[in-house]
Length: 115
Length: 110
Image (cartoon, rainbow over all chains, first blue to last red; front, side, top):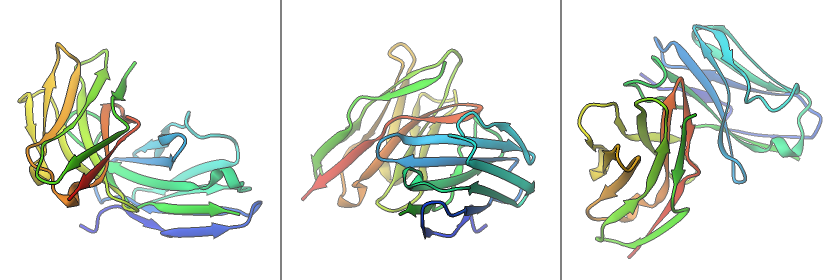
């Protein structure tokens, strides 16, 4: 298995532009998670899906952020419009089920820089 | 509520000496606990996990952790540090979602 695949690896964009981050989870995993990592706030859970349905989006910072999972093999995280404070590394992770006996498999992350 | 506290933000050891990274957790339930490692500019890799079986858990690269309910601790140890162990380590508690500690940056000196 190729693991969790994220694209792009790096993204540099200008303030006000729309940014779309992509994630392909491991086949068969029912849960998908989006995390954001910054020096100031560490790793924060933004949103997670179960069977393509958003379960908890309480970590999404504001309305500029949106996430979708149109099918079991693809998810997007969109920021519109982007701001410099959105600069961070965004990780996608997938799992058979949260907690219990399973850890999560993380992608390599997308490093977003908004200038 | 579930939470983890990593007691040291930075730990520095010499190569060949023992490593101890400390973690305390708070959980209303019998927790699932994990340690993840993140090497510079890399993603997160699972080191080991505790899931209410044996209290001493062995992970990859010679790391192990002991679950102590009475102390609500899950400290990570390794008998002999290697230069390649230099990274950031996260203690994680899980309840429907992973909750990360702030991380401990481990430096290993020759």
